[in-house]
Image (spheres, helix red, strand yellow):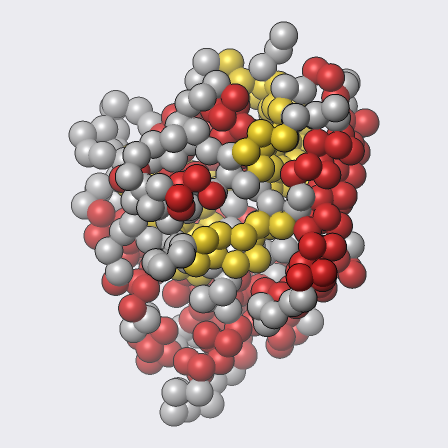
Length: 369
């Protein structure tokens, strides 16, 4: 039987569901089919509502959990229909869920993802691995980021120091040094503040290629104020999310600014915030990477990438497409890989990354019918 898995990823940007059909072969990955399906407006609005104001009745939460599960199932079924593969050829689905709250701090640390995996298994007939972050939290970890384990498996080499940077709504780095333990952590906001500011000021959900930011000027005073947040200097392991870096966080900071700033100057400054906190994190790691490999939606923001290149002048900046996976599909491939590890009883977490007491297979298994 071919080693076929489906990975499903719903990122913090809420722009849609990424679904990939992946075949694994030793340390090789082949993406046979991939698609992004935008959230239906009503469903996106409900999820966005609890992200912006995390108060909801138990009935509303339960119904939303199942509704997202139905939507994920439809996306999986649609991908298979457009491919040459059948559901019975797929070993399992690795399912990220959509994170609506992430609280890795004690007491009673928890993370909550919606998109009922039982619904996915029942509707698709494919065994589904869900609730993937929970075991790491139960072992004292952050439950995030999980990408460094896959980044190490796929991108690491004994010949050079590399860093993989995933720029989604939140940005995270994986430090792949041949002579040091693997470390990885969330650096802070990736696209989330950029997207929200663009939506607020222009009614556009993102700044295409960073073209709007390019019309503005970086305000050094605002940048310095934004970077005083204690998260940026916190020692890893650490993780964060939209419950922390969100429009309210930005609004509270802007209220402290003593001058009137143009909207495009704020966008330029937020772009620099993402670029500089990524660069600061890499510099602080001491990895001195020869190669920085980018993935996630931010890998298509040319202005953001130009700024990262300037701030990391000694590193070659590439995207994951150089290594066979397009940047927008890497996280979905990650969840397919985590599902594969779970079924093979192999660890999906790295304790030096998440802070868990030990490595373990991640996720609950929901068998297809």
